[in-house]
Image 1 (spheres, rainbow, N blue to C red):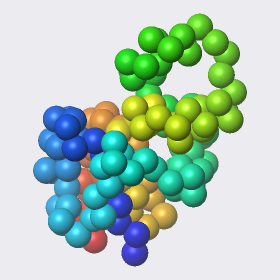
Image 2: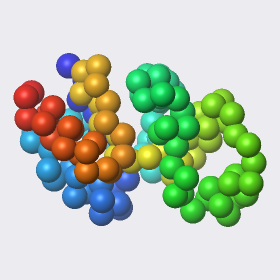
Image 3: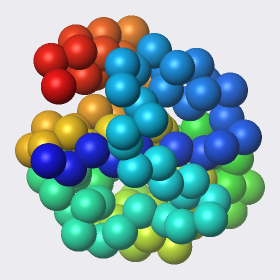
Image 4: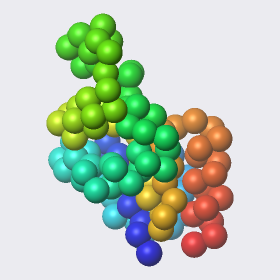
Length: 119
């Protein structure tokens, strides 16, 4: 079974969430600053969450500094930007089998922890 987490090792929120996940030591832990998300995983996750825009982080500092907030972006733009620059991926991203969990909302983290508990 696939068990991966895409995270940023310097992100305190990622660390806090990962600490809550039972069996986190059994997950392949991928620091997106070192090795960005794969196109295959991104495509799979985006499909499960309603598109690339849903897994795109508008909070990334580069989003505003590069003027992306002033442009109309297509789904392919979101995909390209995430694959080119790790900061545009909402994080953390957990893959457990066919399930994926993106971001740090309380609801998402609760669902992730519940799913990981059943492994």
